[in-house]
Length: 134
Image: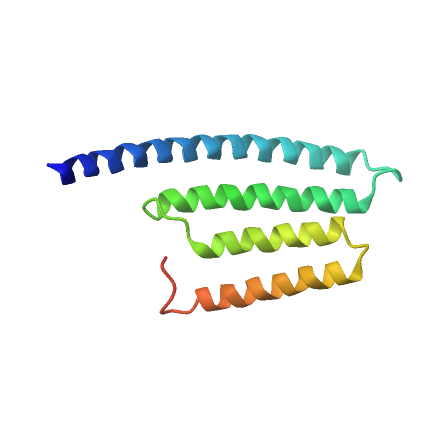
């Protein structure tokens, strides 16, 4: 009897999780549309005051939204499972954004690049045939 209650509990919480991730996908879609409009306006109204760093930062944030939305899609396509490699893609993009925004300290930038290298090596290892799960 206890196993039956555990099964109901896991189904119940899985449905709650799926619903919340669905709503997260909707919210991310709205932010993606908002960022698209912002980028189009920034390009159309580009003047000398607009920094290229600011524009590149906006594009990288756009890709972060896109990658998180792709992660939500993959979650539902892979039977409620998040593939590891998508988290690595998001981490690399976030660190690249951080380097573009904050690149005054050479040592800090070097540490960020080492973090990217570590993530890329992890991605290569995760994509090996015997490790890959999707």
